[in-house]
Image (cartoon, rainbow, N blue to C red; front, side, top):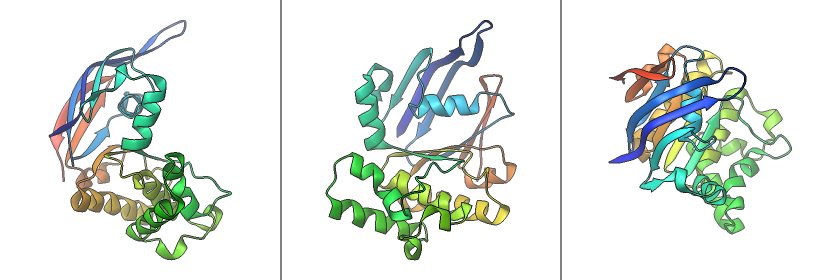
Amino acid sequence: MVIIEAKGLKKIFGGEVPVEALKAIDLQINRGEFVGIMGPSGSGKSTLLHMLALLDDPTAGKIIMDGTEVEKLSSMQKTNFRLNKLGYVFQEYALLPELNALENVCLPLMMLGAPAREYRRAALELMETVGLGLRAKHLISQMSGGEQQRVAIARALVNKSKILFADEPCANLDTRNSGIVMNLLRRLCDERRQTIVMVTHEPEHIQYADRIIWIKDGMIEKEEKAG
């Protein structure tokens, strides 16, 4: 079943010389699929992820996500859609250093107004899932980069997000921690049928995905099965 569909997706950045970052992209992503987006620097892969993840608005085109034409939503409706259905993992982790790991994971459910007992239980379960149950009370500054990224993944899933977006999630990690994070994402896809859309520039990450979409000059150059 298709969970994300883009039709004629365009993005033009204005200025003295407008830049057409995306050129009429058409794509479909199925529920429970792990899709990698790859391409050279400046190809438009992160721009595409930002459009699909509702972090930016396209100049033209349509995005249908989980049956909803999201470009028709108001700003507040998009915010609620993101909070309820989407999760995000970024290369710089985007965690709050003044909070411990568990508190960082709790944040999305707190923003949704969930009862304290519910969001703490859900956060603790996910800390166990990502292998950090014994580190839940540690401050972010007391954790390695790989551990911080796993906290970020737990936070992205605590709202039972239907789609997990990851933008270069291993860019700041060494080989060992990259392997831990990528194996975790693959396991989440296999065991939970978690839909994952990930931008990466690392060839060794191809083996973890089900399908790779190659972007070049703002267009889909090719698609291929991976894994």
